[in-house]
Length: 189
Ligand code: GRF
Image 1 (cartoon, rainbow, N blue to C red):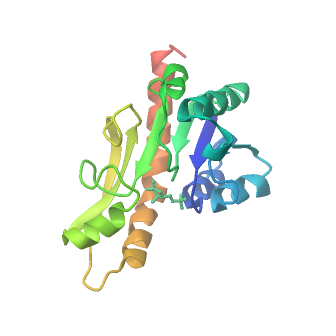
Image 2 (image 1 turned 90 degrees about the horizontal axis):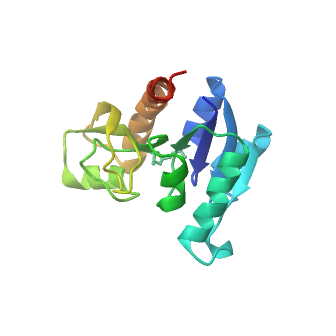
């Protein structure tokens, strides 16, 4: 399925998908100078820039973002470190076809951008990452895949994040394949 990827951060998940040959036809960002946006430019992938400051509301931003994805024929949308919450236009056009990767074992440490730090502060022995469908309930859509990692003595947020991200790079590609198969089956292809 043709993928759109939404990024706000360094873009290691986007890079991993490109290295593995996934058909990314469009990248969208709210942070035009982020690493993920640079990766899209370097690969010549069509990049849509939708910083909130250019729009009167989140709804207006998401109408433009949605229209950009549709114009590129995106069939499955992957949030890979995107730090805004989608509104109705995305759910109207991509219902059941939006995935997110979150750096915790959801439902633990949902709802923030600091799940790795929260896991460290909570002193849990294990954490991990989750790929789930995006619904209007933030970080609460159906889980597709999870992977666990240990929290080791002496870990700081950098070492723990690196361990979590290594697993993200394994499960996001698998989850995309699973979601693509499910979406194809749903439309009888
Ligand atoms: C990942 O840890 C993901 O779980 C979270 O944001 C981070 C993005 O990392 N939602 P990257 O930009 O793909 O390197």
